[in-house]
Image (cartoon, rainbow, N blue to C red; front, side):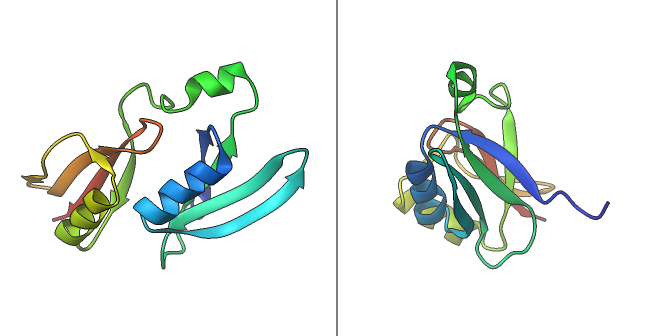
Length: 128
């Protein structure tokens, strides 16, 4: 096996999720295909990369809807690496991204925890 291609993120609505990930985080849409019956295959990933993407999957029932924003039990579950921490942090703040802490500079790099539009926690991280 060579790599993890996709990670599923359960969302309330395809279009609101797409807006957040493309506008606020600067991701690109890799695929957005209608699969019929109100479902779509929606994949985003950081612009200019070829690595792991997020499959944005709309919740289909009450159990899935209850998991939206809590897929990792309140822990940081996603790690977004950057080569320009200060620039990306500033851009994301200007786009309305909610950071839960001030940037920290640790031995492993610069980091700040933020939430996506549903409350999932992410690290914005520039490794040392």
